[in-house]
Length: 111
Image (cartoon, rainbow, N blue to C red; front, side, top):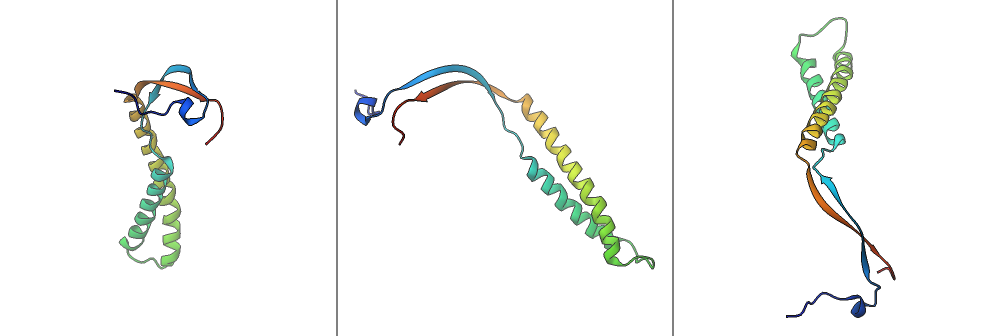
C-alpha cells in the first residue's frame, strides 16, 4: 500500500528537514487577566452588598459609602484574584509533562 502524503517532488516545494529535537515541558497555565477581572467583579458585588447591608449614616451619603467600599473591595478582590491565579499556576507547574519536540525548518517557496 502506498502513502498518499504529498512529497516535495509532487508539490513543487523543497524538502523539510528536522533541525533539532529536544524535550520540552507542557502544562496548562491560568490566564491572569481572567482571575484579576473576576476578583474585581466580586469586589464590586461585595461593595454593593455591603453598602446596603448596614443602616444609613447621617455623615455620608449612600454614594460616598459605596465609593469608599468600592475602593477597598476592588483592591482586595484584585489581590485575591491574582493570588488565586498564582496558586493555580504553581499547582499546574507540578503536573507538567515532558514531551519530545522536533523543530522543522522549511526551505523554499511560501504558500
